[in-house]
Amino acid sequence: MSDIIHLLPEHVANQIAAGEVVQRPASVVKELMENAIDAGATTIRLLVKDAGKTLIQVIDNGRGMSETDARMSFERHATSKITRTEDLFRIVTMGFRGEALASIAAVAQVEMMTRLPERELGTRLEVEGSKLRGIEPHACQAGTSVSVRNIFFNVPARRYFLKSDAIELRHMIDEFERVVLTHPEIEFSMSHNGTEVLNLPKSNLRQRIVHTFGNKYNEKLVPVEESTDIVTVTGFAGKPDASRKTRGEQFFFANGRFIRNAYLHHAVMNAYDQLLPPGHYPLYFLYLQLDPAFIDINIHPTKTEIKFQDERAIYAILNASVKRALGKFSISPSLDFDQEISIRVSPVSSAGPVVPPQIRVNPAYNPFHEQTRPSPAASSGWLDRKSTTEGWKELLSIDPGRTAVAASQPDAPPAALPREIVAMGQVFGRFVLCRWAEGILLLDQHRAHKRVLYEKLLGVLDGGKAASQQLLFPEVVELSAGDAALVAGMTGELQQLGFDLSALGPRSFQIAGIPAEAAGQSAGHLLEELLEQYQNGMASLKFSPRERLLWSLSRTMAIPYQRKLTPSEQTELAVQWVSCTSPQYAESGQRTFLNFTLEEIQALFS
Ligand code: ADP
Ligand code: MG
Image (cartoon, rainbow, N blue to C red; front, side, top):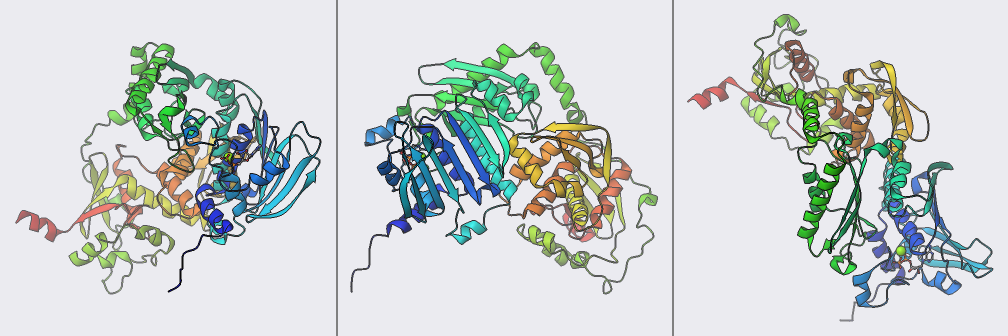
């Protein structure tokens, strides 16, 4: 037999490598901006068209490249930043793999213009799908401009799986923020489709945070500063009363590089122990500086995960420094502060873990009271399937993955179903106990309400009309650039769903009305929580953007656990739930109810 192993052609190898480095347009933003920083630029501009699908361009005034270097820079493993193995352990630049430009050029059409400051003429070159299309002398500014067009033009599957513009833009802004937060001494700007998204003058770190996230951040920040032999910690932690129910801005940087690290996050959260109401997150911008020999940034190509040699010590130091900063700068004495917190938490704790059942609802509350039960043969829909124990078992064993399907292909509306249902009380602060023809029912109040809201909102988007609650005093919310981009991208849907929303500026919105179901809630919190849910709440579930929006809003507005329900609220929930098209589950296959038939209960007694 002849030999069959051969080396892959360069462009194929590049494309494979590109799969790791270039996951989406945001990866290009990160790599190009980091190159500009490594080139010593003091001004960096990012221009984006169509959320990066059409164009991503980074222009810097850094040291530029010679013609030979410009050509070399697109080769794989071509870098000016390290030469020897030892260098890997003392990396001081953002890049070092020499993979980024080669990978980007493997999956896009790239144009580079670059000039060494001391030369009069620069170079212009074009690379497309790893092939050099042209290189020529060119009159241009000192520094480098790299334009990346039609990303994934030759990898249709990748292009197809890009998310909506709003989501891709959000990812790009995330990357942009991570870079600008490490270099307040550099001037940055970003524009999208010709509109300026952010313009950040050279400043100090505190101003940079404020410029990036909004003026209100200025009074939220407490400086953190701690220097030890192992690590220096600097930056800012958020005041406890600036915490939010949404995860918001939490940033770790190690040696100027954005990192994620759940263990260190825990160290910070632990420092806030007792200071935050349950379910609240602090904001933080924390910078660790340590000997590069003690960290290994080489474990992941996108380099947000790193290994520390002495993680425990760093945990302890970080924890102590945040605690100290909070203690030192807490304006109110800690006793008063505790009180303030406990007042805020009280709606939850005063409800108590067990709410005595509210006995028996007057059947007159039940709009379905007059209906008679149709014969099984005449009825249709999901209720029939479980009118026997067998049927119930089948229903209860439907696998969770089916929910999304159930949501997009609802069963035929149950026209004439046994909808007599009587709420008998609330138990454990989370279930509504009901009696109906099928037996005794425990309805999970939060999940059941989510399902009810989801179907209602779905009807609204499908052409129904949303009930909107107009606010007496319209609220103005200022969002981060990323959140603002997301809201701008779905303003139409939000309005349809009952938000009376208008843009006041690039990052501020006025809310004059909210969906009627959320009446009484703060409009700003509602929107912020919705954004949080939309982006982080259902990370693992595959939903279309529309379903994601609907479930996020339903989650945000649904009755929380421990909320006490009046008898009429209990009945209303039960009746609305039983009228749903697919009442069995909430979004991730979470069961909304448990039913006990007489036979089952008798069997338990035997
Ligand atoms: P890495 O950054 O890991 O070295 P890249 O593929 O991103 O790899 O870049 C390859 C090389 O091209 C860099 O090492 C650098 O010498 C050069 N280069 C890239 N971008 C720029 C830029 N904006 N200005 C100057 N030189 C650059
Ligand atoms: Mg690089």
